[in-house]
Image (cartoon, rainbow, N blue to C red; front, side, top):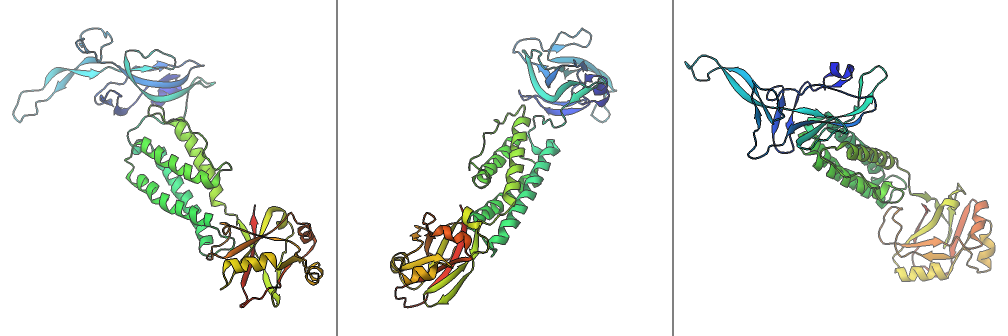
Length: 394
């Protein structure tokens, strides 16, 4: 857009290249004269389009240079042309047909024209200059046509790097890692080279770029959205891609910010052997009991069925200060509920038996005033099992 014209309250094109929707190429001012500037009204808002008359078979399409313009597709222009053959004729004046374009303002009828949006105006400012939407994305056939696309691609690549760094550290041994951390690392590792490739080539169609990023946003929403679903995005419109890309960019920024913030889904609780077949589990923060499930993981050479029978039917679990009484009375205390599978929030360590403390038990409430709890089993254990314990976020 011509800045002097905008300052004067008018819209004018200084230079432009492109292809109209009917396939007609143009280049202002090389092969097509710039359309006449048009004034903008104070309350005028919407798209401004560059337009040429539709080509009608059998109809006259050229207004000759010596006649008044009658709205034809082409306008005759007298040009001095040099002979391209060595030793040829002297330069001659020729009449050349050039596309005759006009600007269609918001609210104007574009019937009979092939139009291509070039700007979005928002009326006039107080001093009389035209307010143009700075973030407007004109139709384009490749990403290189507008540096905004490269900026968004770089932003996504950087965001994926941060997600990979955060979750990669947990996967490599950080406390509280889960299978979700591994899945998010896989997401970032697989998506980054694809977006980086599109950034490096800068030749893809914006529609392809939108499809790639929308798919990435959908995968991210699985982990980063409270509903586990991606909110509806505006449909991509080639003639006006800004609404769709603006919504997609905002969604990606929000999801990347959410996913790079890593909060452990579980916390390991210290387990210590107290005596034969008796273990103590320490809980430093009683608030964990309000927001977490307490899960025991037991590993042994014994079969899961045997372990389940011993720990479910023959175990006593109680608060540290109440365990002795329960143990002597051979009371179960807090029941242990077998889990069908290992919670994905805790580090995977083979198919080990997992048991959850029943929070509905009256004895569970006693843990809030105790430094932890004690587990004891009365069954015969050929070999002492490996026991660890986790507070798993609900």
